[in-house]
Amino acid sequence: MHGPHDHGFVLERRTGWVGRAGRQNQAGRVRRLGTPLGILAAVTGAFAYVGTVDPNEPGHYPVCPLLKLTGVFCPGCGGLRSAHAFITGDLGAALEANAIATAGYFLFAAVWVLWLVRAWRGKPLRIALAPAWWWGVGAVLLVFTVVRNLPFGSALAP
Image (cartoon, rainbow, N blue to C red):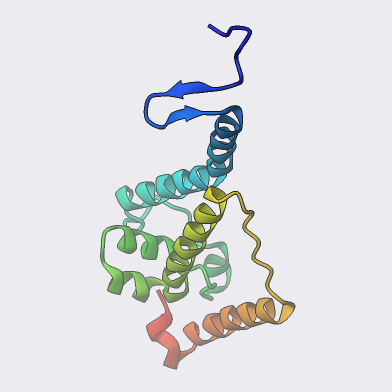
């Protein structure tokens, strides 16, 4: 019960006395962590699905439209097989199916951890890449796509 001498303090079982600012800080922290934790839940759900529904068995997933229409592997071709191999612990098969996607899983994990730490500390995640970096990423994806479709780059094909 709050009385006339209530100064905004409550006794918490685990942490002792916490003022209003402490409660607001905890509520803000929970709110800030909601988005990165929600993204992790969605990604975990997607990987769990791909881990249980094997893309190597025909009929479970649609065929890549570019591959179906042109016979050309796009940079994402083999991504589901890569995710399946990755989640089942076969890193070699994941790299064989799609090396770029596999590298992306590790990059996602690193950025997600950074995001979570910054959210915990109350700081926004800002990744500002100069245009040259974006052009570089595009160039890597283009080279990867071209090479995996040439005879000497068949090791990169799914």
